Length: 240
Image (cartoon, rainbow, N blue to C red; front, top):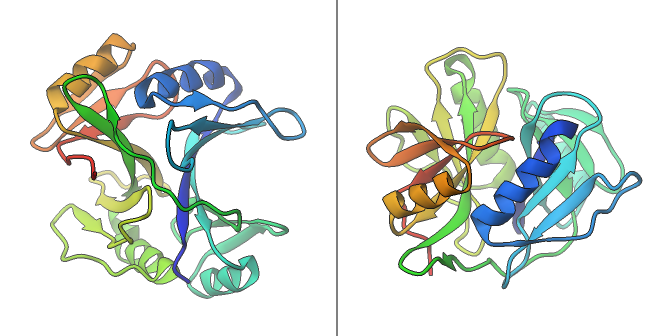
């Protein structure tokens, strides 16, 4: 199927919407579009160059989460294939809403996007939101990795004990990483990752914006924002 673009949606509980949009606009250096939708529930984070790959949605109910839009040429065959691989169809129309075998929400959409945004220069270092990490409980790992690899046609790189990376095309704005959790949570969740040319400087910038360090590891720092889902700053240098 080969998705030609991938968009990450921050699906936000009503109380999380305003502070989360403020935080991520500052984190990314992006503008915020006017709202759209029947109740003004959607907005897009707008990079200075390139096509958008981050959007927000105010939920009517349920907790804050992340879902993915996979942009494809045709929705119907993408749905048929995903369902055959174990996904569950939740809603169908101009776009389709599904759950992966592990319960992670994804959509198939057709609107066009082609130009990957560049990293933002913060005056000494650069950073970019360029990865979605699927957080998968151990009992679901093998099936979820197989599903995402087959539904995207992206091969899985040689695994480590904790991670499985899918080899997505370099022109896409978001890489897809699968992390095996220690805890056996009910369903698959996700978080966003930033690449940065200087993790310490980028972490300090986020702390000044109100985020709190939740853990420091060999190759990444876990952050807790003022509102919305947690995320990580990694040592991966943004692509140029």
